[in-house]
Image 1: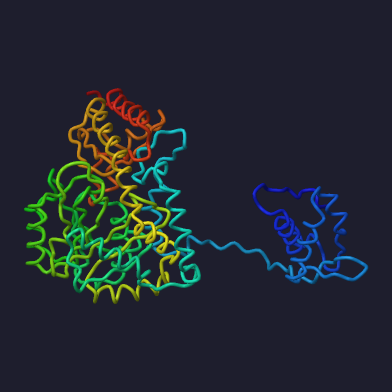
Image 2: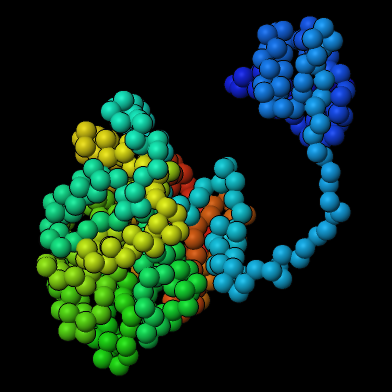
Length: 482
């Protein structure tokens, strides 16, 4: 007995010993009133210090798992170890249709498996090598020293007030009229969208969006039972004529747009089209959900105002954003900017679901932003990503026989191949050669786009970008010609 005790580095040994003995007691391997080895015997048997055993025994006694008898030693207390008869439920019969749909739409489960040795163009997350860890540590320690007793306690559903005030100012600088508007802090974009969809009064049950569009948004629309009308993208944004036609012929509960560095196409909607979109939706009184995706990652061209900026004092635009694709996605912090009456209701939905977003995470992010570290980090990140972006564009032009390539910035490009090329079939060919990407049909509203693919380059080295794109191009030529 006790010969299977193994010490793991980096964790106090007395805790490991306590947990080991606790497991043996609760599993019935050590029975009630059984005498335990003396502290001297056990320390010798396990080659650990006697003080370690003394501390572990003291903790076990405090938890009521063992008891000491003066002059006789330590014994196992009475611990209920009864196990009920074994049964096996069929959980696939217990979950609902929405759960099955969520599993079916789960790309992480159903996309091609890959390993770290492969070149993966699937991600558009930031490169962790760029993370400003030292300044984040400073921000963490600074905020904890200022109000550690507050940020480690429960917070408010609406969010951490200093961060809300910072983000309101941040949006003002972007040209948004924040009068009569407010902010709700969320656990990233996805929770923000889910809260909004859960709060909307579904009348027509239809949503308008670009086609293709963000796969996470599509998943949520489908889970909430919305019919989706997708409108094709032109090089300067959504096809406005088709948008007009849809609005004239059908009723919609809302529209969802990604005007800047659109996911997946990377297209930036022109200023003229932004104005036309806002005029249209003002006429039809239809709300717009705007995804402020990667607006900061502009490598060239002039600044374009968000739809929320074009709205002025109007209250029909709901703006959702986060720093996840730029800064630290592990923090899972996003925000909704909307009319203050709507935020009032969304706050209650947030409280009912998750109580609040981590106050500690919000406070540290606020400190990091307020101390000016974000601006310095963004300059460095934009320089690195711009170089990768330009390299990816050059490599695609050189190696991939595409029909159309889009992407004006951000962390990805979208490739349209000849119609006879199936990107899922191509993916299988490339996987065998150690390269993976996302086939474009997962982003389409109508199961089209079988000849398209998205290339995320943010987390790859320059060598991997060139090598991976060359393999994709070679695979196209070898199996489809061209």
